[in-house]
Image 1 (cartoon, rainbow, N blue to C red):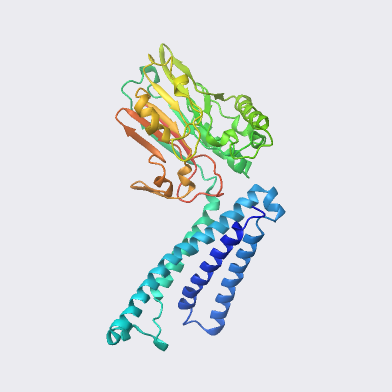
Image 2: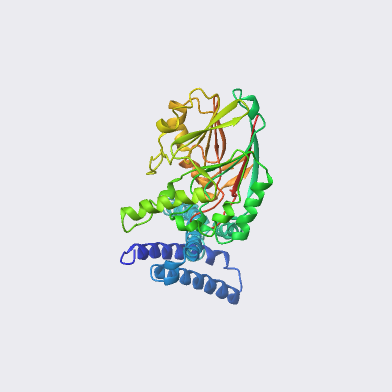
Length: 415
C-alpha cells in the first residue's frame, strides 16, 4: 500500500468527518467563555491533526512495519476514532435533515417557518442532538480504549448438557473447551499462564481445542509451547486446526515455505502433548463404554473461508458408537453440513467468531455485530437432539482488546 492512494482517500474521509464533528463541537461550546472555547477547539484540532498525520505516515513508520503489537494498538485507536466520529455524525445528520425541513418550510410558508429561524435568519443546530452525537461517539471510543484491559480477562463458563444416548460410564464427564488462542497476539505470558491455571483448576477429564493456535506462523508459539504444554487431562488433550493455522494470510516466498510452516505447526501440537485430529476420529473408553471424538480441518460456509475439512474421512468407523463429539473450528459448518448429512453427531464444538470481541451480554440479552454474518456465534445452540457450542475465544486478533465479549474457558459437564 506504500504506493497506493488508499491512505490519502481514508485521510480525506477522516478530514471531512473532522469538520462535520467540529460543527457540533462549536454548538455545545457556544455558551462557554472565549478562553475555554479556544482551548477546546484547539485541543480538538491538535488531536485530529495528529491523527491525520499518523494515518498518512502509517505505511512509512518502520516501527509499525516491524512491531505487530504496536501496529495493532495504533490501528485500533485510528479505527476507534473513525467509528466514533462516524456514529456521532449520524445524529448530526438527523439534525441537518431537521434543519433542512425547517428551511424548506420557511420558503413555502414564511410566516410559519420564521419561528424556527435564529440570528441572521439561520436555523440553529440542535444542542440536544449535538450533545447526544458527541456523547455516544465519545462513549464508543472510550469503551474501545477500556477494552484494551480486558484481553486477558478470562471468564470460566460452566454448562451442563444432557444426552439420552450418552453411555453410563461417561455420565458426569467434565470437559474443558477452548478455542482461538492466536498466540501471535499475546504480549503478557504471566496473564496467559493465569488462564492456564484457571483451566487446570477445573480438573477436567478431557480438554478440547478447536483451532487457530496462531495468527499465521508456527514460530509464534515458540514462547508459549511450555505454557500450553502444561495442559493435561486423564482422557487427553485433543485439538484441530482453524483458518489462521494454514498461513493463508501470508505472502510466502514459495509454496514449499507455506507447507513447511503447516508441518512445523503440527509438530508444535505434538510437542505440547496435544493430539491433533486431521479429518480423523479417536475412540475414548471408560470401562466397556465408548464415545467417538471426531476432529476435522477447517471447513467454512461463510465468506471465502476454505473447506479443508473432510467429514467423509473422519466419520467412517463411528457409525456404531452411540455418542459422538465433533471438533470443527467454524460454526457455519453445523448448518451447512453437520445437521443435514451427519445427524448422529450429538455435540459439535466450534470457535472462530470471537464474538467479534465486541458486543453486549447479560443473562437476558446477547448481541454482537458478528451475528449479522453468523447465525451461531457464541454459546449454546440446539436443534432436535443435536447441540452446538461456540466458544468466544481464548485469545484475540486485530483489535487488542475485548468489549462486552470476554475471553472464554468453557467447562461442559455431560449428563
